[in-house]
Amino acid sequence: MTEQVAKPPRRLPTWIRTRVPGGEGYARLKGLLREKRLATVCEEAHCPNVHECWGGGTATVMLLGDTCTRGCRFCAVKTAKRPPAPDPDEPLHLAETVSELGLTYVVLTMVDRDDLGDGGAGHVATAVRELKRRQPSLLVECLVSDFQGDAAAVETILDAGPDVFAHNVETVERLTTQVRDARCSYRQSLEVLRLAKDAAVRRGLKALTKSSIMLGLGETTDDLRATFADLRAAGVDVLTLGQYLRPSAWHLEVVEFITPERFEALGDLARTYGFEYVASGPLVRSSYRAGELFLEKRLRGHEPPRS
Figure (tube, one colour):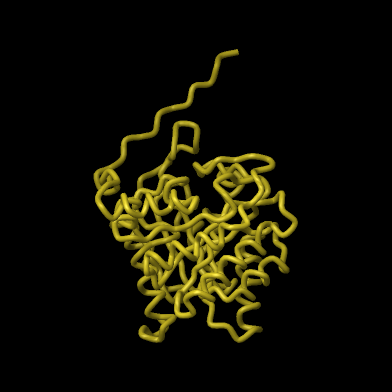
């Protein structure tokens, strides 16, 4: 049998090449994160915007460790059937770090933890509460897993009081089984987003819901139209569209590099479905600084909702 050899990643087009991380702000934040033993999705997922965000003193912290129980074919995060137990001091270290940085808006994400009874929802909720206790004015966005569709876990997150509940469908329904772990489901992701919106409305919370789609995996415009409609039907308020970038030769290949002009057109198309805010561009990611600035204005009452 011939040994299968992974193909090298394709050369990046000029519009998505970024700077090598560095600078005083980058070094300070990296040192602080190491000191507090915090993982970030910026590093683990090889985010191309790490120089910009870290240089400005912001990072998306990844809770529950740096090892996921799922193995999606697009993701660079380490995987294991049973990762190390969560660090009980992680929420405290997170709150100390955010306080030291003087942030007004923070994004928390998490690895999937199917090995835990509640999928890690209680740990994330503890982190949100600790952040809010120390700094009541802080805006907190939680980018969470699907918790295997567990409504109780979703409500645990909402009860902690995040300002934004985010969960990514990642790709269109037709490509989901090729792109995501077998335990992920497009319909399950939609249901989690719907549950979050319903729970927020039922509790009288102002929490917004948010999702993200990677482009360049072979999706068509018709696929995207259907996905936009599905997300709006689930009550999603905010959408981000970005280019899939292959983390290594062992991950899914990029089918197409979408041009900035095409991203602009798709962003305009998505807005016709009624999202409050759409960020669309090659380097846009789930945690996207321009989107966070809009959400901060919106949540603090300085920006009117968009139709």
